[in-house]
Image 1: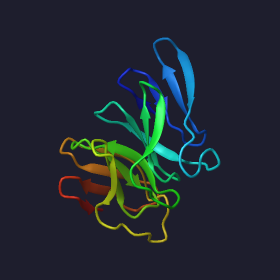
Image 2: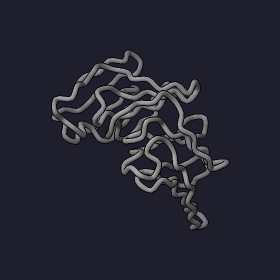
Image 3: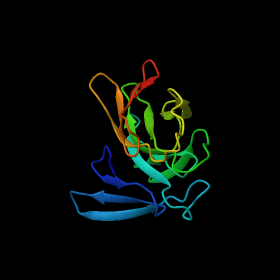
Length: 171
């Protein structure tokens, strides 16, 4: 879930094809249908994690979906944005970097996802982390005070460390 600028809580459209909106002040709950991308409602695990960016939009991280999903809390619309990436279980969790870009933590993907909200360009960055016959390598991440992004191991044996400024990856 992501807290928007308006103070509402936005639940990601992982398996339901909807964004759950919770207003913690009024206790009102709403649901917005956001059928998007190749999978629509037919595929489980469409998105895993979301990030509130400086533009006020919420960007949901593609897991089984092909593209980043941009959700506008003001008009409650969703749009698939950026380059399409194929495959399943690609990224799990996202982090807003100090540079304003959204970073997806590799789950089954071999590289880190970078999405720039200003240009709406999605790209793969960092070293190729390979498969190693491993799936669900990392799940979620965090940004430290120096701007370094850390991925939390799921089945990987090491912590992922990524420096967006140099695009260097280390384990």
